[in-house]
Image (cartoon, rainbow, N blue to C red):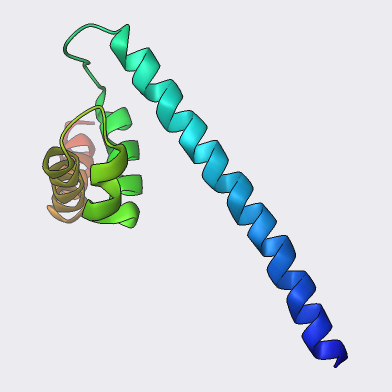
Amino acid sequence: MKGRQWARVLAYVSGLVNQELLLQVEYLAAENRILRAHLPDRLRLTNEERSTLAEIARRLGRKGLEKVAAVARPDTILGWFRKLIAQKFDGSKYLLSRQAGYES
């Protein structure tokens, strides 16, 4: 019996936390829409900003991204992630460090 009571309390508390997080996300999405309305037509992002959005977008997935993406289309943001991964494994950092070693 006591195990069931703890399970009910835990379910209640986790439900409250989940509801609060959903409200925070809803607020932030509305705030984003309002702020975007005040920005110029095209927003220019740095590579670091693109990387940040791409990493989060990958975890969110295409369907989740379609609900919240406002900076660019979901396909574009996921494309940024693919480029980020490609750069990670293309060996360019290795080549740059080797070239720097030869120059000095």
